[in-house]
Image (cartoon, rainbow, N blue to C red):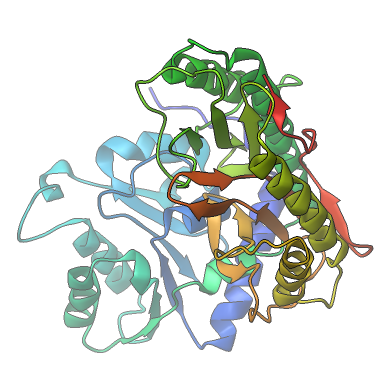
Length: 389
């Protein structure tokens, strides 16, 4: 028996549109074949979200073929047949003996495919930042007549501007994020284990809302006193206590996309220091969103925030956010001073205003937004308050 094609997150025409844009970029770079190895870019171009990029794999986009070909490990091929939009013959499995083999691996199968496709003496693009150095060297060694060029981030920059269909999926993610933040306010209590609270939060991220479940857990970061001065530490084995502050970062996820959201909680009335930074940052958040418009720059948004909180005696050392979508972080545009990336409609960002002030004190608030013709459309909607328990 053969595995059936699963429900597709997007219609075939959407994937072909994305591939058409990528091929236009390939044409500008005079690239005949592009080997996509970044798992998030593979998701963008195919709909595949299974976790298999820890071993060699690659999506080959040939400029003169409608569908790409996906070469991956044999035991992962059924997932690609089920999830990816392409025809069955575009999923190519390499055998298991290439796993853990010091002499040959899955990249050899990719190179064999390029030879068979007749592009071994043409220009081939690689996402070199997503490949081991030894793999890049192998491509160059085994394809001596090819011109191998670096196309790192070529697809990622294309992802920066979303389609309306992508925006709708991110709205679904944002609704899940909002529900998880509200669930956290229900389960954070003195004497409750942090792990038990996180289990409830994760349950909401998976169950989803409005009949739309989460399809992956992207991130749950929970830092409670005295660990609020850091940003990426996980929950502990401890329990919540009276007077504790809790910083929470999470994101609902569907079909590889995410919508980040951060909120701060206080067991008991927030102290003066926490309240003051909260008030300053909410004002700064609103100023940053007010600076969003087509033609403005990422730097403009960050400057609006930084200028506003400075009036209240605060500063933020880290950037104010980043391009956001598939795989959480899109490593392209940053909301920071000096980033002159021009904002365009349907760009999406995590306006991440976490501020880690001292080793034992920090504060978080954030929103996920998209750029529209009129300004910022905030996708997340949880109350902008310190949740007092």
